[in-house]
Length: 111
Length: 112
Image 1 (cartoon, each protein chain N blue to C red):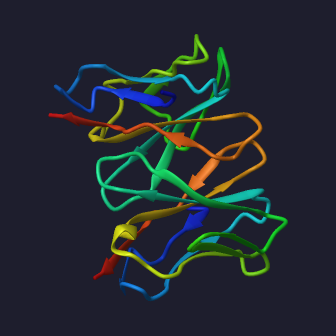
Image 2: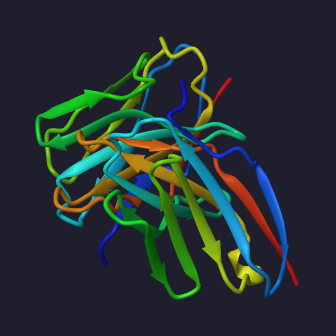
């Protein structure tokens, strides 16, 4: 049973607009959440993270929001650029340092 | 140049043969992880190790084995007992004090 879910397999956005990627989780004991970006045939690269005690973390064009009551995580990219086109995975970490990944959302930013 | 290396990038094997995938890191990270990615799916945890000479099963450990004799190395053996071994395999590592995992470039294993 998947504990981290990304229900949108793909998202298409115009360059310059906002991209919003969503992630839901079931385990309220997760300590930490991360977003990774992945290009085909490569390993994921870390993008941004948030502790379970916070509700927002911002890094340049990337902001992650955490809604603990809804068990929902989102990644906002503003403004979106064609180079942002990739698969984005959200991940959650439990207190045993075990990571749980969502199935990914493929973002396509159109020029 | 610090990082994680996985070799080879592409690997082909006949059904019934065991195969070992290499993962080496020079980041001095304590923990190492093996994941499997199938088309259209996320990363599923196979095994992980938080210290040398110790490792734990992940969600899909059946048909796989690992060893952690050195801090830098965490090889994964795909045995003939693994029913669907063809996949993209990713190795990752992290510091004990951090949540950020660093990933290798992956090995694509094809078993025919």
